[in-house]
Length: 112
Length: 113
Image (tube, rainbow over all chains, first blue to last red; front, side, top):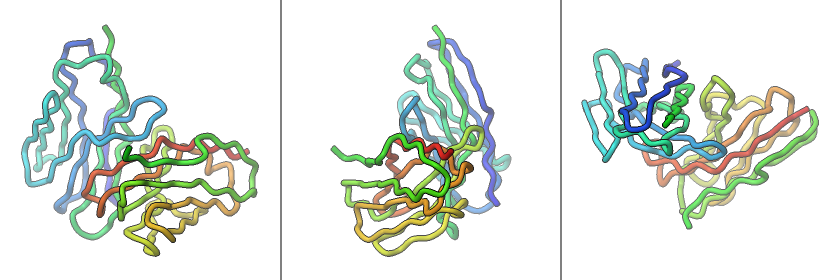
């Protein structure tokens, strides 16, 4: 089956940039998503990218995709304490299974 | 307000006692799904539904049932819960399908003793 891997923890200082990394194994066209989960809440979609794109920017968020290495990253500029949460990478193939594959989540801790 | 609601939010039960977790969305979404979240495992899809009366298995359907008799509701049924079903459960919906933004409910924390 498909696999999505993420590092489990990231700690940054307020005001610095955060980079959360993800690798995936699906070799077909796929959609790749970043979700944010705050304590006690469900997941909130932050942004997504299609596998034929290289980059997508949305305010403080930048998604970079290296198709060759199947590596996806989420960069948060000027990280704030409110960005502390768990971030999930997920991929959904364009064809075939409707089942998304989520990574295990990266806990981002932002300290003053 | 557009939202996905789940009930109950917290439930402690005993092995073998049938239970239902309700999920309702008010956005007229066609696609609904159930996930479980376990520490270190991320989210795994249990079942999904593309529309009324259309359901299909996700990654981990064993021990669960679902039904989709109305567009807005998608209950998750545990006929005979076991301790390995202790988990945090999320319901989600999206307008048409997997590529659309999924809206998640607040979660139901289930403990089976």
